[in-house]
Length: 386
Ligand SMILES: Cc1ncc(COP(=O)(O)O)c(C=O)c1O
Image 1 (cartoon, protein in one colour):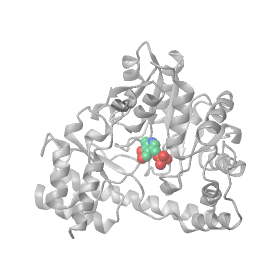
Image 2 (cartoon, helix red, strand yellow; image 1 turned 180 degrees about the horizontal axis):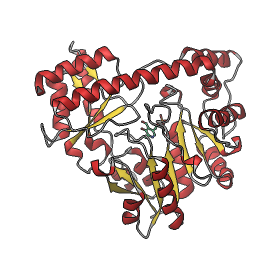
Image 3 (cartoon, helix red, strand yellow; image 1 turned 30 degrees about the vertical axis):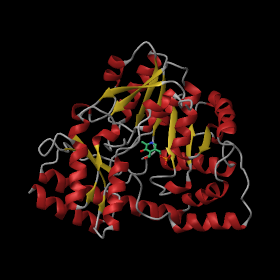
């Protein structure tokens, strides 16, 4: 008899959408045309100037480890980005480059949690967050949020759900799967609560830059004491490069560096040199025009879904997603998604991937495909729901 694996594995769930994606691949292999609205990543290839810079970096022989906290040039470029885009003065020494926002989440979980500690987070929300906490023997404390909360964690509710073992709150703005943004006042109130409770505040700003006509304030405009997670994956369109960053209070940096040295040694060196080119005028113009394209897709899909009877009480201001209520059609979102795929060739994500609260009544549409493919999806949905 072999020894069992760790108990923590029982608490770490796979993505349900994997089943949908595997079936989509099978159907495609049989010649079916599938419209993909499930992937949480921009469909555009990484902008050409970034690719060129990474190729040059490889040509220059940048194939070795780099510093555990990232190459200084990239930390300085991010500091300039905060100055130019946000009007904020962030010392590059407070910025650490990480292997994606995922790497930042792991470092922050390891930094903050003792076994048995809890951290508040929204349900629905990004599912990996609670799994990162579980890895370090902590616990994600899920706060059910719905339409009445605009699917975000507000101070009042956070206070209600704060427990004896709660050590802070973790929010994302704009959020996955709902695209909802926390205003500066809402962030301030949350920060005041965390201070009052002597807790930490972690804000995942990975969808910053993908906000459409509505400002997405950074917690860094309110305090230097919160933790910020961000990434080159979404607005910068570099998911496969595995590059993100975090901004931490100054006193946390030596501890985070120690963790990063042990866990990662360093990030991908040539990815970092490539990312330097993401801040050029040429790259920013490409990225901003892609953002405008996402906005147009959101507008189109949101209106069409609302007209068909999907519940989207108001148009979300950011990210790449529409989180839609399907009560009118089904009370089993997994079944709903599988049927949609099997019978109509449209792949979307069931609510269960983001938590349990009203999850059977919700699905996520990702507008990470071209407008013409979105039109195709809408025309297929029309045949069923109109
Ligand atoms: C809210 C949120 N945080 C973090 C991540 C992780 O992103 P990455 O590791 O690619 O930067 C994702 C990915 O979809 C996300 O949606």
